[in-house]
Length: 265
Image (cartoon, rainbow, N blue to C red; front, side, top):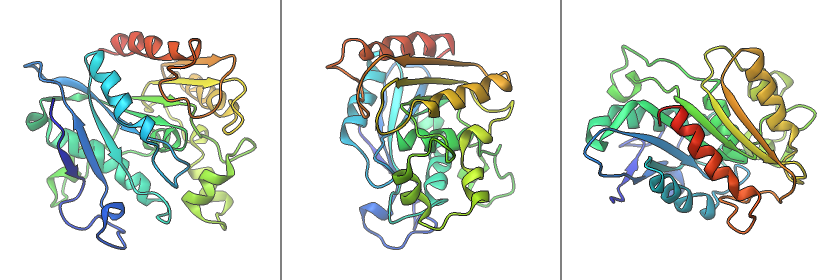
């Protein structure tokens, strides 16, 4: 298995304020060698838009590999970077994987994204703010669609309304976000019939990100007849990752594996 760090932009990323590691968004590859174009899931670790949790990086990609799915970990930019930089990074990651599909031995029609917590918001934001490619752009990467073919949302931040997780949105937007801006990135308000299918899981008693975030998003998907699967587990703290120490919640990986197979991943 290869580990190839790939910068999202060869030169300075748009909006970059420096040239250090935190200014250079990148993908780290966990590619299978099956001899055929594989499905791929881009993993986005959570951290409240202030950090990126290590236990939601490589362990998740290795799990995906174990069920026959290639993977990348996306190191997107976090605070002090503000919106829309994070969305640019997620969009570029999908475009780049599609652009380099032959090099990575990836099926460009089976590119998903998985996000935890605040990165669940980033993933849902990508799934509701995408384009089919900028056909006349001089950069061939930008000509690719940035719509993910599916989303996996793990205890996601979704809503900037009643059930907001204030820390994530403060890190993302700053302290003076307008109502219109909050509405525009409150993902349950941005779903359309073109939003990609989603697998969503949460714990009922999550004290950091209210389970209503997942419920609101599932209800919006239902309204627009978008396929989804929602699992709410009885109990468990926020930030469980694979949940290896929680026999009940750890079932999410098996459930997700079955769902991915149904999605031809």
